[in-house]
Length: 350
Image 1: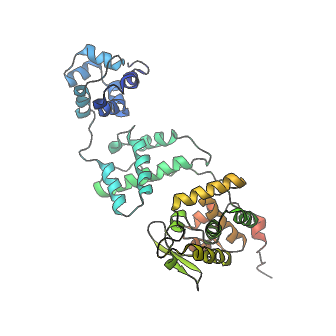
Image 2: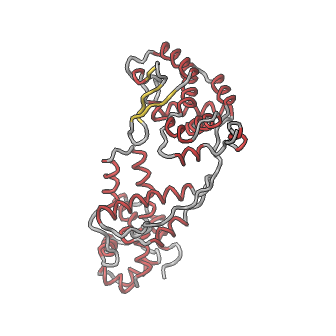
Image 3: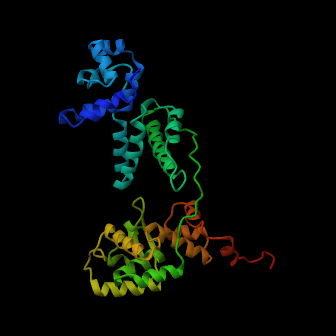
């Protein structure tokens, strides 16, 4: 048996001693190497690595560092059976080739790596996946964090099965049940209050447009004057998944937009003079000032909720807000009550 904490003792104590051992330390601390050191006896490891039993025993007990020779022997042993290709890298390259944003590629990389660091993914079973998901704690949004990992692993294994014929441990596996939380949105009066407190014409235009158009920050930050169609009150945007679409806007947004464009005069560049990160910083300041939720998703939910309270059905809201499914609209508008809907009820028989 390995002494409790023994495997981590050396890497924690001496990890900074020699920069050349960084990769060795990372391998030594990986779950798969730990598993082999647990599984194999001192004699088996000594024979694999052609080292002495006393040295192997010291490594197991955390009394001395593993040599590169020992690590290499473990990784090349038939017990390890590492595939000849880096399928995770190939998967990420396929997502990049599909045109996914870097943020989406990073999402897959982080979620799948968390699994691959502890499980030999090329021969994982359904039970391995379930154990991994069960170990992810639920957060403030219930099992949303666990469901995110489920989606990433499902996409990865569907790709592995389709492209290389790997067994798919995610086949017919249902995702974690998400808690149906009511996500925050703003009332019309609260939005008007935020606009009143905004420091500049630009900030007022941004807030009005977020609520009247349901724009994502990436869509909003990329707007150019040539994208605005004043007669139809629509803006051409590059939406999620690099899909070109149109977003509507109303009288309040139109008024603030005209005022701001007269002040700024972008001359072909984006109309705000700041990037998406700058927009988020402005919204954070407004939140600190008012105590109201001011993140971009709150404004997008507010767009959907105000439309639904105004009698617009979920299918139309999906199209206007460029959502991919009605289910997402329903999730965004859970704050709409029965009483809100009752106002638009008409008896079928008159």
